Image (cartoon, rainbow, N blue to C red; front, side, top):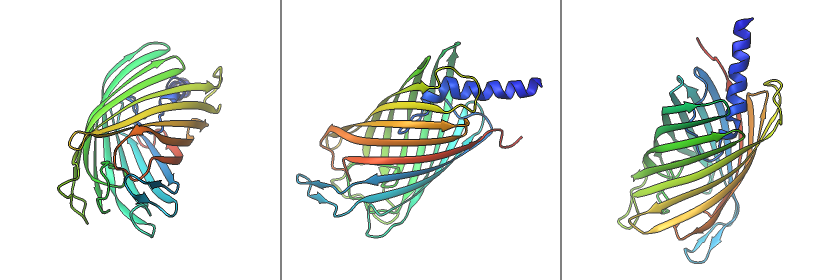
Length: 277
């Protein structure tokens, strides 16, 4: 009986205190529960796009499929493995490569209805696409590696998070950088999540409704290019295990030569807690 109560409180604490930290476009400093496994299916959609300045023209929509496996190693370490496939760089839908992400939480200051956490992250990707654009995107477009810091503050039903990092692009498996393309970039983001439902928790089977606003930017020091995007999202969590994200991302300002200036995201995620002993 005591063990059942402990498990219930652990799950409730994870999803009631931290549900608004499950950002859609960034990772918080918090980690998945220890010994848990998560399965994600991310579907990105970019509408037809024409940019007269860069002469980019896409006659049809572009799609990217990104299945993702997540592992909560322990309370401080977690890992993601990603695969990518799309029609963004070809006329057919085809595999593009994969990536590995790892995060280490090194600071946690917890109180009753708030906490402050910091984490370090790193990711590496191997991609087979042609290198066509100046945005270094390790989520399907570019091979390379990135690392940085995440800082997250929870204040009751509001969670704020900042991410800052460095990205280094390397040659793709089927294409090399030319002399005019940047290989170095800095990324930054500011994310806010608000838990709107339920108003009062009774059990962990209650649906959660979260609203998010995320500002996402990059800067290329070699070409002096930059952009700033705004992503707004709605998130539903069912039975503390199944998660649905719907999001729209749009460029607010910028001059970076990139594949598109807007996209939609649909994410489905299922989590298995205490997946192994």
